[in-house]
Length: 511
Image (cartoon, rainbow, N blue to C red; front, side, top):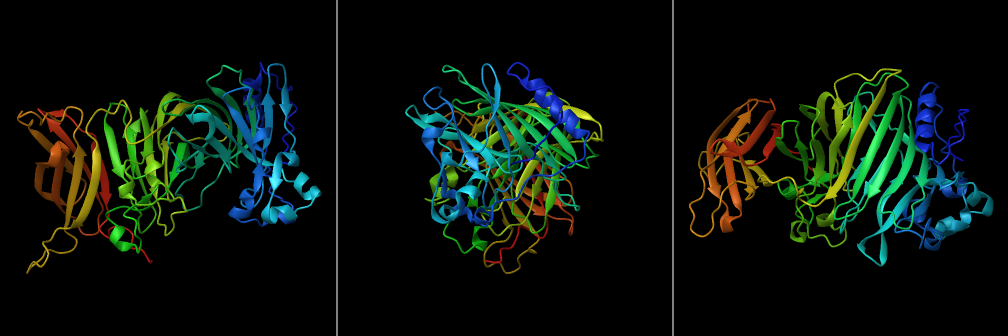
């Protein structure tokens, strides 16, 4: 079961577990990559997603049930989840490996046809942690680790949406992406009064190995503290640190293009970034015609993430998927070797809301060569539409359309666009209540190519914020990278709206 890594190391003890995982990753990096065990019993290899879900973990068997606020349920292999992982429990006195036990599961549907021998050969594919996240009497799923180095965090009131990953390699490269795997986990048994859960992981891939420490901290937002020590087995072309993956099918700008009753369909609607010097940036997502990779350059940024700002049911009208409850997630840099680089955003075309087509990660400029070692430390934080320390006015919506009046006798070319950006009233934008004159707010706009003209500003109804609109005249087929923020008395009072307009426009659906 799983990849057996015999590295002739001293056995792990509770006191040496961190050093043990780190030594294992370092020694493993000096050896050739041996791949994963993906061989499944024939009766359990071709399960579809519904059949796989019919293999159910027995909740009463959860680790630490009734002994701690945290409990862990184990996940079997089967169907798409063919890769085995090794699991260990770190107790107060010893470290014990957890052999696969088929009696922890009930097999229903097609999986019930598997014989005892096949069931015993199944193995684990990951685990999920439960905690009373929303109600004291109910242990809700708070994080799940399963498949490659993927994991998903939930905060209070959230449903599953975007995913995190341990590491990304060569995202968006022509030669193809390399997917590292978490191949082994060590779960540290919590005490009855513990309010955090610690666990370790060993990462492996053809190019990189890694020793990870995670500390899960539930609260008003879920926080996962991550420490990653990476070892390069071979040269890495592009290293993606703290990667996030999500789905953006369409928003209000493209809704007319889809034969669907829902106005919007996405897990995230924008990329956020806080630069080293304190500039907040918002880049709306799009479903592009072609794969597009853009980067927001910086040196040691304070943070970045993917957000789902549209949080009203009426914006989606979807009772089944609850897109308005998908989590936003923030990556906060804590320490390590971040250096100079860029927050890189990949946007790929998709026709399906069941396929992630958006990825974001920190890509350092400094090469990661065979034999190199590197350390990253960061916090992952779930939130809704706004972080507590984001006090400036935020972009609420972006609309782009043909800059023409309906029925005009001599309309401009279709390439001429009207761009509308609405900012929420917040921070130091100005007080429009009780008869006080609104502050003089100005728009500062930059563009890399093409021309901007006819800039207009107006307050939104009900003192909800400010609207900036302008005419965009692209320079032929050249993309226009635009920046916009608001100032009052020369002081910045909003985040920076950042958007790249490609003259061919958004993706045209084939639906």
